[in-house]
Image (cartoon, rainbow, N blue to C red; front, side, top):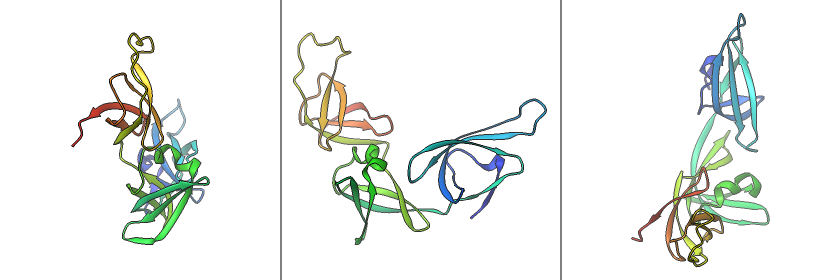
Length: 191
């Protein structure tokens, strides 16, 4: 594990802070008048997802977190827990509290492959693709003249997630969703 000085703590790196793994969301080094430079960062806890703002001063160092990845299949969500099984080793099953991974699990179907970030060999969180293609399970019919709302309607996807789409989307269509923003990007032609 490498030791990082205050100016090496950059966006995208994963660090140990107070013996907990944090992902650096943003980092900005600046100097106020006659003072020493400071690295102002936003850190997201890898387990809870909580975001904190921390300033690192010139004399401070942190260690890089020992983070690995493994691939796993998404199994199901039940009673507040989302379950996964390691790829190639189905006996290695683990779960996350649903509230921690719900914003990601709502965009994946059962048996989808996900990357699991591990910290000290323990699963911490999942990473999913930025764009996913999902089938529309239920779409209300488009009503002529219903463009006051910007020409969109709320549909339900096969994963149970709901998203606003243009009026021309129907039940059975495949749509591409941006998982970072939770928004519709385009309709995909069926293969």
